Length: 182
Image 1 (cartoon, rainbow, N blue to C red):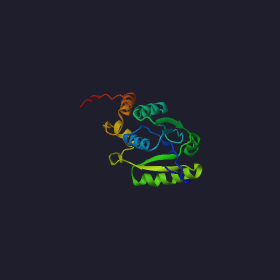
Image 2: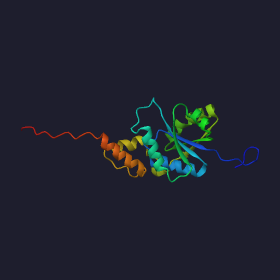
Image 3: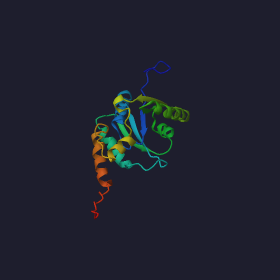
Image 4: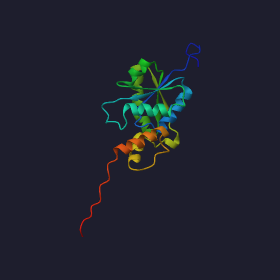
């Protein structure tokens, strides 16, 4: 790559922010594709106290991401609170990576990307979803899973193990059938 001076410069490090509650194969696809382009990708788990309580703790989400990305040498995992723009500047990120599943994702992410650039000077790179994951979201995966559906094709194996364990601890006991006299 050549800079404006015509001299080669190193590609920037990337940050991929999200709540990852839980990490899906769509997220993993974006991470792998970003890691193929950038020398370092930091998967940054957003800790947002204004959002509803996540299903998975911060430590569970970190562990799932680390396990799911262990095959990618240039990926790291961290968490942050506050503005993404400030965190990205502090860690020296050169680009923010965001995955886009559908057109409405672009509409929602565009204003955020412009604000982040205004606050930090850091651009956002949008990565279109692989079509096989274009309908997969963390919230939809959780809903299907806890209603008894199979989600093996939507989450990494490491995530599936944690989700099954979580479901076992959250599942209420079945109500007993009472016999009523006729």
